Image (cartoon, rainbow, N blue to C red):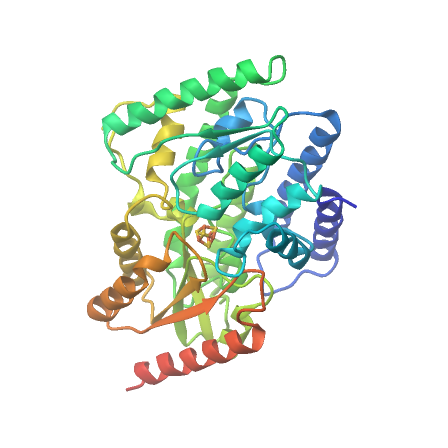
Length: 421
Ligand code: SF4
């Protein structure tokens, strides 16, 4: 059974479980999210069988929506690893091929192994760019060198500056990228601007709802917590994606009105950063101390935050391609650490946060460099503690469930003591 077949079965079971026996502590609108994931996985499986070219366009923070509008089947970027049904097997394959799995981000090592062993197809056109998940780019380059026939790695240069010159620089490259892809996959790949524009109109409608959700979520006690916090940052580029965000907004509003809490009896409000261990539920450990994780700040979730949207293009309306470029430039995987710190401080004030869990993902080239800067800023400006929690995402050989649970429990006690001092 390949990855898509296994994932389809898993998602079907999840949907059935929500229908028959919903978990009262989780949002019911998750069902729509699983249905969207199921439809996408079914599309991927069909595309593989039909021989449609695969490309992720470098992910949702680069040219992901553009690749979709050109007719590529979605590769899933790092999402394919988050949904992996046999992560440890893939980590072993990456190790055996020489990737530095033990010292690097394990999540970005997995898609490479999944392609190498045939669990998913080899990506036909892998896009690399100067965002910080280094292993992902190395793996794409390795695959294009070792499986050369009709397979390509394409580099897009995205500068750090949020200004008109950079916007033009990236847009020009996107135009060249389209030309290259259409020539390389004749009859299969064709840029459809109308489709891109339609996808962007859903995204824009969803963004307004996400800003409403942000305000609703500031409520004390938090209407949602734990895993439901981590499902923010969801790209809604289809009618069903927009329906999901609308239903989520309505459900959260209803929970606020009824005074329902993600963690009943909430005593602590925590903010979690970067990523988390996917082999365990860290939120249950915290919930035992009545500690609720009420916000998750990371690369993709900046889209949920009302004050974070830049507008270096002024008042003029951007073309669909310029919008792709603007999103790529604004990606929080590319901005300086000062942006992360500034936004974490603002969210922490808005949400009246009592403590921060900064997940020190071993080998994360995007975030480890500023952990001390963040901790100092949080202590100085908010007078709240930070837990620098070291761990990985799928690989439990570094820090297992028991180690992580003990550290979380201890941190919750420290925060509670500080509140009651
Ligand atoms: S941001 Fe860090 S943890 Fe997340 S995928 Fe990139 S390298 Fe891995």
